[in-house]
Amino acid sequence: MVVSLKESVLMSGRLPRSDDLLQARVELLSLEDRALVEAVLLRGQSTRSLSRLMGMTTRGVRDKVNRLTRRMASSQFIDAARSLPHLSPGDAELAKLRFCQGYRLRGLCEHLGLSEHGVRRRLDRVAAEIQAINRITRRNARAAAQAYREYWDGPAEGAGE
Image (cartoon, rainbow, N blue to C red; front, side, top):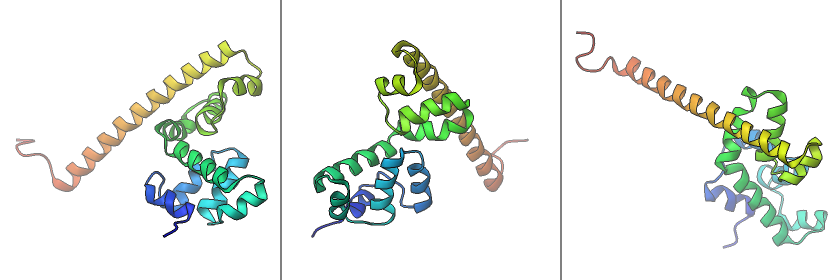
């Protein structure tokens, strides 16, 4: 039985099944990548029709969509996406370009007009900030979950005596 690319990607479990969550991740991609992923995963267009429009082989379109879904499911992409509101505008742009849109070091240098050394230093700093933000948010989420459990289950045995 032949399975469409959309069904194949969703069955892999890499991406959320909710269109709202998927749309939020797709918004972080470049315009060209966003259009392709929206066409295949949100609107269900066939890879054959897209390959004709794009002047690519059907296999090339499938490979590109699979590569983009792997990127959107990666921990780097998710961590950067969660951290964007907490970063300064310049750092958020750099994180989005590198971790969400997949720019390489040389492309970042050309886009930002900085040397490789300068971009590498900024990337290291931004990656460290993203890790710190994610540690804090995970810790806060665990504390909130614990408080929620205590609220509904009552205090632990022997507490408060």
